[in-house]
Length: 270
Image 1 (cartoon, rainbow, N blue to C red):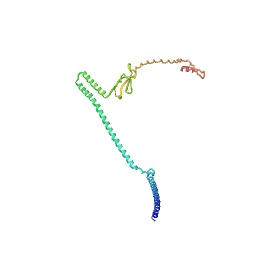
Image 2 (image 1 turned 120 degrees about the vertical axis):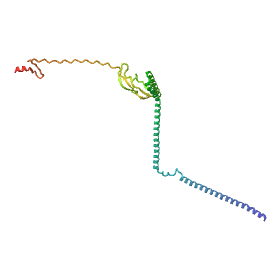
Image 3 (image 1 turned 135 degrees about the vertical axis):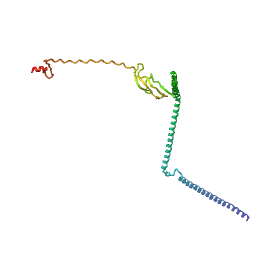
Image 4 (image 1 turned 180 degrees about the horizontal axis):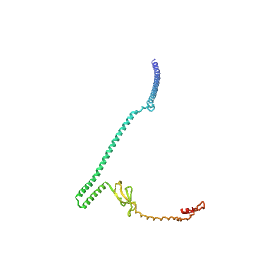
């Protein structure tokens, strides 16, 4: 009896074990199916969320958005700005013009002061010469004073780069000479300056004043001998008509003879 129960228990244990295995297998399959279903649901959810995000991105993408209507420019503000700039530039130019005029006047005054300052020494020498004229009895002293004044004057002109134009004996040049008259000359060729009335000057290459000169016309032309008057031809004298003389005049029309006589003949014929 006891052995039979043991055998029955042994037979029931393998049967129970196989059932448990089948139940475990079924549970594992259900669990795997559940996991697979959950995975699919998760993938579906991610796909749905990605599609929704793409739609939102498309809606918010500025490249795909339609351009909004531009605001109309404010022309009044632009005009006011341009007018302000114009007034500012006009004021700046006016200030520039005034500044340049002031600087030009200052530069001219400075150049004038410098030039006059150089000639003050010449003025001093002239003053001393005028004072010496009243007391000096020797002409040589006066000549020496004039030479000093002339030398000082030349020194000032050289300092200002002013040069005198040499004219006498030079060909006439209309660019630096001004012809006052013309004269014939035995020694000076035609077109050459004979003498100078006023000196001309240059400062550098610029002409300050042309030289006033007399120009030669060459050798004087010899006077031609006057032709002798031709004698007038003598007119043929008409023959004197004597009393009773007949003059025969033959015309081209006919050969008629006309007789002319004095009053005496006419009376005698009557």
